[in-house]
Amino acid sequence: MWLSSDDLQAIWLTLRLAGIVTAILFVVGTPVAWWLAQTSSRWKGPISAVVALPLVLPPSVLGFYLLLAMGPSGPVGQFTQTLGIGLLPFTFWGLVIASVFYSFPFMVQPVQNAFETIGTRPLEVAATLRASPLDTFFTVVLPLAAPGFLTAGILTFAHTVGEFGVVLMIGGNIPDLTRVVSVQIYDHVEAMEYADAHRLSAVMVAFSFAVLLALYVWQHRGRKET
Image (cartoon, rainbow, N blue to C red; front, top):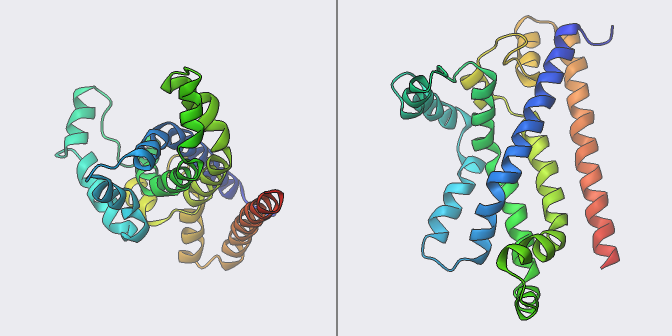
C-alpha cells in the first residue's frame, strides 16, 4: 500500500481535528469579528493584538502556557477535574482546544475584513425597514460576508491540518488519539523512514497547494465579476 495504515489513521485524525476546530471557530470567531468590525472602543486595539498573537508567537510558547493552564495545577485543569472530565492534555479534545487558540486569527481576521467591507449603508437600509438587529445580521450581513466566511473556513481548516508545535506539546504522540499527520511525518524522519516520510509529506504538499490554488482562483473570479 502506498500509505500505511498508521499514515491513513493520522490523516483521518487530522481531518477530524481540522473539521471540528473550523466548526467551533465559525461559532466563536464570528461574534468576535463582528464586534471588532463595529466597535470604536479603546479596547479594540488590545483585543485585536490578542487575536493576532498566535500569528507571531512561537507555537512552543503558546503550547507551554496552554499546557500549564490545562494541567493539574492550572485553572482549566482544576475546573475539568471538578467536573469529573479529567485532564485535557494528551487527549483529542485537548488538541481541539489548543488548535482553536492557535487558528483563531485565521478565522477572525478574514471575517472581520468582510464585515468591514460591507459598510454601514446596508445596515441603515435594513433599519429603515424595521428589521431587528438579529434579523439584519442573518439576512443582510451574513449573505454579504459569505466570501469572507469561505476564505476564513478554508484558511482555518488548512492551518489546523498543518499544525505541529502546539499539537505535539499538548497532544504528545499517542497513536489513534493525538498522532496527527505532522507528528507522523516527524516520527518517520526520526526513525529514518525517509521513503514513508516523503510519501506522507507529498500528500500534504499536494493538499496545501490544492487549497491555496482553489482559494486564489475563487478570489480572482470574484474580483473579475465585481
